Length: 136
Image 1 (cartoon, rainbow, N blue to C red):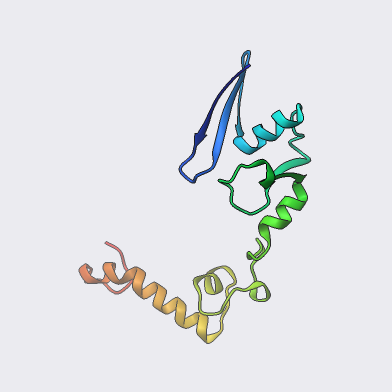
Image 2: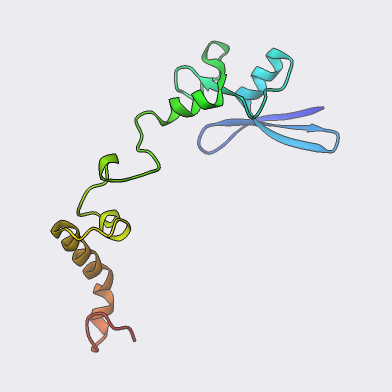
């Protein structure tokens, strides 16, 4: 078994490349450190590594812990909008999301739609003498 790395990605995270015979896998550096400490591979469906202080570049032993994947997902998504947007989830009237996705017909959304189309079609109207929304 050969281990190459750790290599640093542009976002600051580190990974190692493990070559064992004909198989090759890329693993995050903190996961590799924990696997070496425990002497076994982590279960990819159940276990993951969490940085306690939230700094993913800090790979000290005191900062790493093994937690269930579900708990890690809950910790990561706290404070962010969920995948199901809606007015009760934080979407606002007068936005492109409101008039395009939600098909809202309130006055705010209709005004935003007019402004959005005017900006989008401004270049088309300048050179075309055949009307505001017609293409050549």
